[in-house]
Image (cartoon, rainbow, N blue to C red; front, side, top):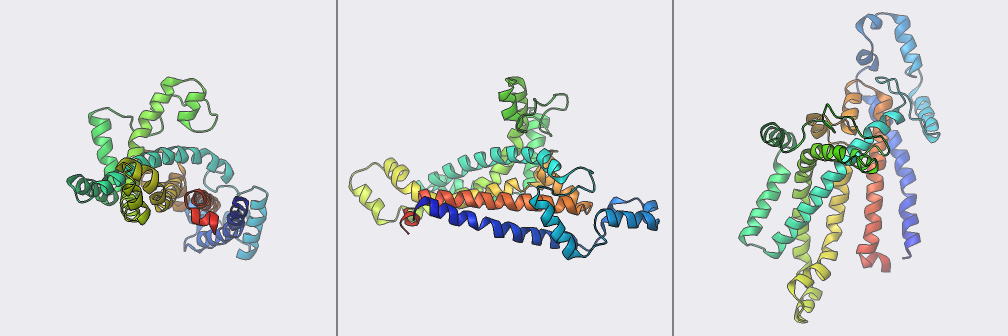
Length: 339
């Protein structure tokens, strides 16, 4: 199959999926059995019928659900996600403010997880049923099973409070000013601004939450990497490569690893999508001003424009991550190119 045709077919599926997500998020945001007025108006205002009526009219709560949904979709096509009830700012502006922090944290977290997971998986598969295999499998199981919030609290207590090896909560120290905003990513903005002092400060605050997120991701990647590599190493073409006299290192890295990475890429893509959608517990513990904390506050205050806007953004992130994974499949799996 030509690449352009494969690319176009995958791209076409995105439009109806996003439309379905808008309907789903609208239904969920409006099906919660609580009243936004109770969460956003003081008790004195709730006793005033004129204030309640004005609130309902301003946010469209007095209109039929179908009309509100169609209005939302029409506004969305113009790039308008509405205004947050809580912040009184456009939802799109809020998302632009909080998303870079989550993207930066998730990217560092997935890099740590991939490095650890792929390495552990290869080591475990190559030395199958040896002592190192049992150790790696136990560490991977702990990484998946250990509660993220507990790992974060223990990490802060040991490496920040006691040893002072890493930065604490937040994206930078309280006394430090962030770098000039260019991309919203503190590490990249520090490099572009030539501020190495701010780069070091930002990285010191990224290390611990990235390792916490990466530890959980690495456990899943390592388990899939091990099982996939063991399966591939039993194929006929691997035995043929060994019969030709190729070293075990060449057999694994050049012949087995590329095919073994196919299911691993899927796990990496889904894990990255999960991290980008907002690691609420990690962001809350580390006071990280990201998308997860924003969505949690929106849900607790029934801020339905923010809930719908954030849900749509999360869905779009998942869709685009899976789209990238599908494109990678085209280059990793020759069966797709020949199909």
